[in-house]
Length: 165
Image 1 (cartoon, rainbow, N blue to C red):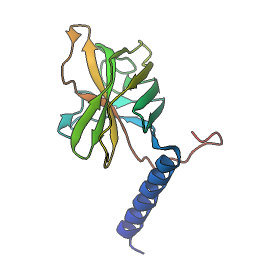
Image 2 (cartoon, helix red, strand yellow):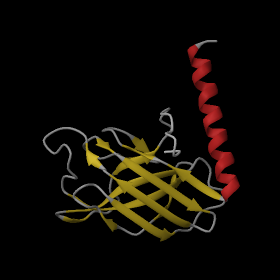
Image 3 (cartoon, rainbow, N blue to C red):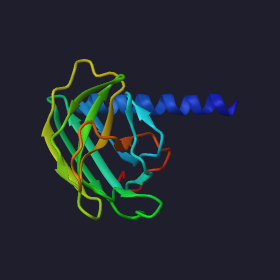
Image 4 (tube, rainbow, N blue to C red):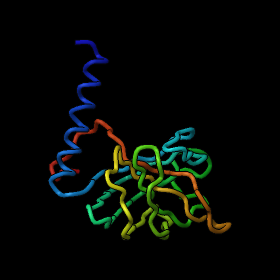
């Protein structure tokens, strides 16, 4: 079997698993990864530095309740490595298809890169190819309108540990 066919098969199986899991609970669950410079999702640019995420959980139920827990969202390299740089607040955006469908409230981002978002958003029906972006909402200079994203849900190919993380 060619490697390209195997990759496509693995991706399809992963997406089917995500859809089945979401359907069982009536929502969407994901993990986040840090963004790289030059990425775009639904016309939204990534930040100007690479970011990493130590741990995260995203849950959105069918009623629009969204809970995001992020630990260790930090700049990955450069002079601001292992810090949040000037970022003081973040928000989550739900992307459906290629459209920014809903945004949460802005919440503080701690100096260690931790944040908790709890909000209720309006989810379009159907929401096809959902993605959750963590976006810059404020910096030390003040609020940021339509900020870039610094983390996004993704298939990583990493194995889960015994606790399912």
